[in-house]
Amino acid sequence: AAQLAAIDAATRAVLREPDARAAVCRTACSVSGGSVAFLVEPDGHGDLVVTASSGADLLGMRMPQAGPTMTARVFAEARPRVVEMIAGREDVDAQITAQLSRMCGRDVTAAIWTPVIAEGRSRAVLAVGYSHPEERLADHVTVLGILATETAVALERQNLLLRLEAEAVRDGLTGAGNRRAWDTALTEAIRQAGRSKMPLSAVILDLDRFKAFNDT
Image 1 (cartoon, rainbow, N blue to C red):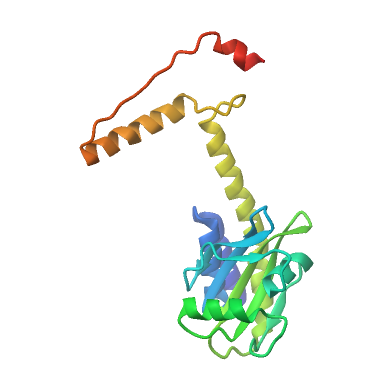
Image 2 (cartoon, rainbow, N blue to C red):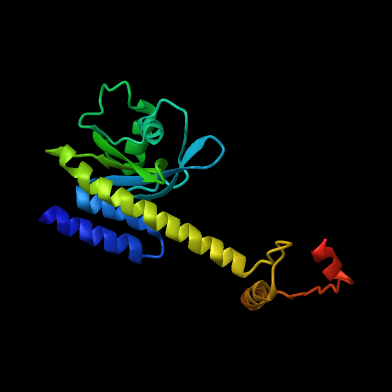
């Protein structure tokens, strides 16, 4: 019953909050009793990068996507992993664990890695670390797995909203800013000039026969 209540609360938080990634990490800690949680996603250039975290500021931390880390392994295999005692494990990167412990301010001694899967392949990994003895650690795998499923939906939704937001201020043919982008930029520039007491200049170009350029 407690796990069902936690899952319900987690789902609501992830889908409701504007920053889905941060909500996922906070919720992962709360439903599993973790000390730290972080979400890693591929950057498209061969690395996995931390895009959100809770319990420690890990934003931007990188690791090779094809490296020997447990995070990379879970991403590649799309299968969750539970390590109840990190010390002495050769399949857990000691350097990253030490860095994580240092940034948390306490030793991370156990962890759960859960793949975030969409359309049959890994899109991210949700990792939760523990710095205190945690009985029946494997019991949290189901809850984190359901949270990971909600994460896939939330990330897709958030990415779609970001794309729609970008398209709303860009011309579809040229990629140039449209009238809405101009209004937003001008308003912000006037605000900044007012705060800094610095002069503001605007340069407007009228391009002849621009329709022909668009058409071709």
